[in-house]
Length: 68
Image 1 (cartoon, rainbow, N blue to C red):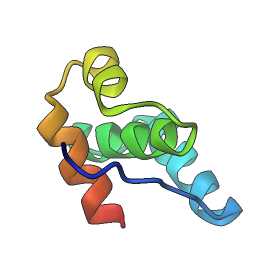
Image 2: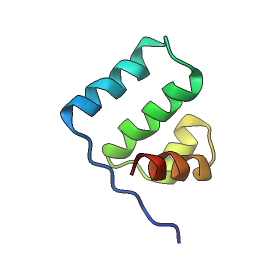
Image 3: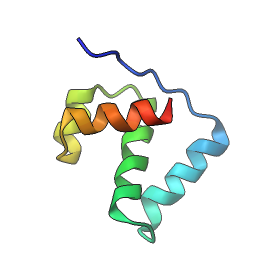
Image 4: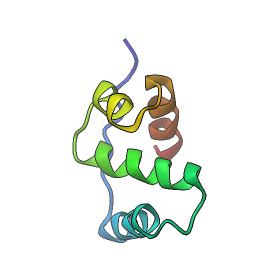
């Protein structure tokens, strides 16, 4: 079973990610990564994220791991 990445964001990090996810003035990849990190911090599972964002669980794991 893959390691679950528990993500805790600082207020400033959360604000920055919200800005990226909401403005739409970034690349699609950046927006997707921001959405994954924000929802991960809210406690969403890999499976939930993959289904909601139409990506693979592997993508979710890689983004979470990179942020760790």
